[in-house]
Length: 321
Image (cartoon, rainbow, N blue to C red; front, side, top):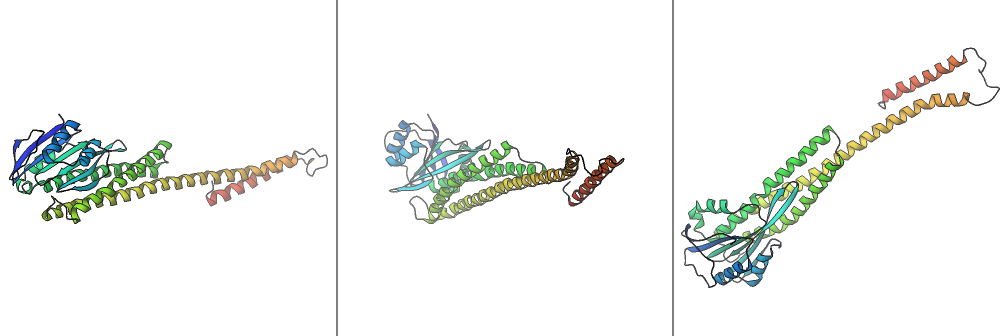
């Protein structure tokens, strides 16, 4: 069985466990059923479909596990899909949570999520007054639980990027480090594609008149919307930091190459002096000035050394050497 928990709540307090059956279930006023599943089977979803009158298209999407975040209305029921995210090294791994919301029931179906809802269920059960308001408060709790995991994940990626930024100021980035920056940048771009639909989902729950969502619950969803937008801002800023890290590394590399080029040019200019003079006196002509001078050799060496010394001094003064 993939049913994690299945209970009926009365006046905000857990009552008895609810088995999955093949006939309709009708909780009374003041009661609602909260069922949590992970990677459910077709048979289990068929039972839930019979118990609560779930729409076939919603059931099909819940079994698929590869949908984009969205909110759909089926009669007096809501079907909400949200994306979970967690880090695996430098990669962001995604999961999916599908939520069926009715007047007296809430069913959550998890695919690939790294975090169980056990902690959330215990937390909500410690606040029976809020839980007594019904499934819409549980819906808020699940979405808030998922969105709250976004920021620590992004902050962990931010720490990794800042380490690379610190490394840039000390030494140059290696090829693998540059590849790592681009891999992380691609992950953030994909994550932004998730944050956009997530913002739309929470925005609809905040602003639209939807079945099963009470007006008193909308301020709670508005708070979740603020969290999503905050994460969007952090991700946008982190992308800019990653771009600046790469640009800084590129500029420092260009500066280093420029310094090396200037040094090579300076030494080439200095070596050109003895090369030119030696080349002239290496020509095989019989009548050349100073060939028979007693001190000509030493005079030429002195001229070469003097000219090279003057060039070295000038290049050193200008910072080329």
